Picture (tube, rainbow, N blue to C red):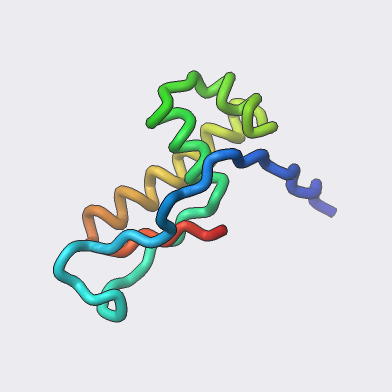
Length: 91
């Protein structure tokens, strides 16, 4: 039996949960879905420039877990930008 997932603390909420490429209809675009924990990790580390150790403490996860969450979120955002996909932030 695997270990249960620890609840992550998320304080920042997006003002919009859907972003799409300009000039494309919403029905025409594929989506890249960003989890709320990925959004929060990117907000803390990339936008607020908080060190990963401190950001991990704020989210109630270890630094290595935060690093994995960041990597996953950044990959999804890069995929959306390069392949003209919409970004949907799940709540």
